[in-house]
Length: 188
Image (tube, rainbow, N blue to C red):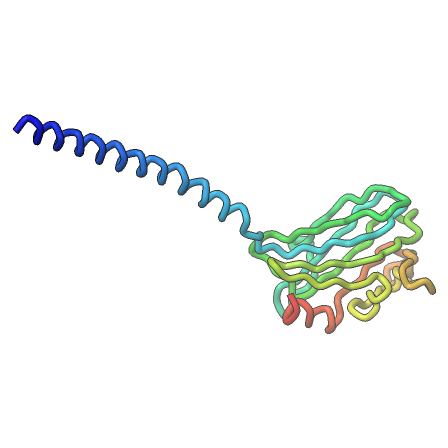
């Protein structure tokens, strides 16, 4: 009888020690797996990355619209400081997470001493999709205002003042055309 009780007690001790140990291990593994899955999710954010040579310090602005008939305004604008460099640099704009553009307008700064910029690439991204535009093909996707002139090398864009009804002003910018808006609606 004593042997039976001792055997039963020994079995209970072994059973509970193995069972408790497995539960502790499972609890430690689960949070680690959850953290890995959360960190690996890409953000659902639209961004524009430009590779460009900008020789004088400036501030570039990205305006965007989200709806048909909407005008570009300071309420939907992102400014990015651009540092002077003779080398290609990345200039990045990132929209707030809930915003997605119908169209964009890129202002090449307000420094009238900025004579030109060299643009090698535009990269439009959203979530897992992207669409790259070579700097030499910007004219296919954007309309240039009178302050931007594409030079013969197709990568250099001369920035200049121009006259309008209020006089001479410096405001070089490009605006997405129908082909650009198609990219936003269909490609990315």
